[in-house]
Image (tube, rainbow, N blue to C red):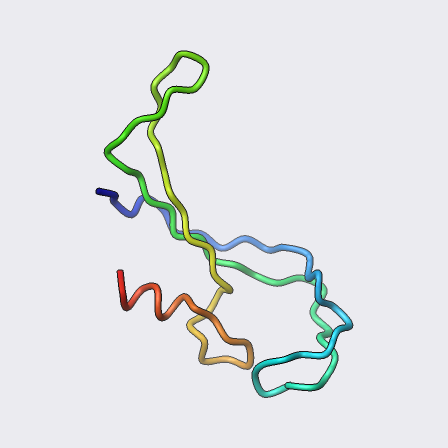
Length: 84
């Protein structure tokens, strides 16, 4: 069992910058984004984990492109929220 503990957005370097896009409105055009934003859904579980002799809360996370897939870049965040 797990409870949603946090949702946050983090920016990462775009490892696909300059490559042709495979999805969205700009399919076939070079990806010009220097960074991309991802959203993290962090869940705390009811099972602790032992780290260096100390019991700490265990968590699980799900990362997806930030957005709900309505923009030019697809995201599986909408599907995750719907199923969750």
